[in-house]
Image 1 (tube, rainbow, N blue to C red):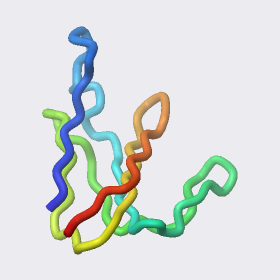
Image 2 (image 1 turned 135 degrees about the vertical axis):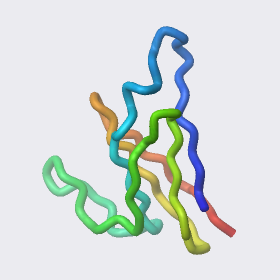
Image 3 (image 1 turned 30 degrees about the horizontal axis):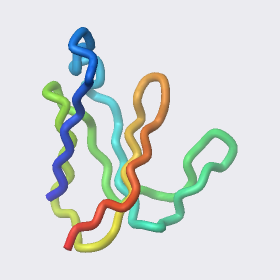
Length: 84
């Protein structure tokens, strides 16, 4: 299992604003490149941010991964996630 928690340094921001946003997990280095303005390659797993800001991937195999969070204004890329 891979668990992420989305928070904000700004106390005025409501984390529920991110509820339902898509999150993809790719095997690293993976076929992860931009084709125009789209991601190319198929994610290994996909999920959505829940109402508490949690990102939960179940049944993640061992390996190294790249996670992409699709937020309203931009995409967040987290590299170097290793599951031993």
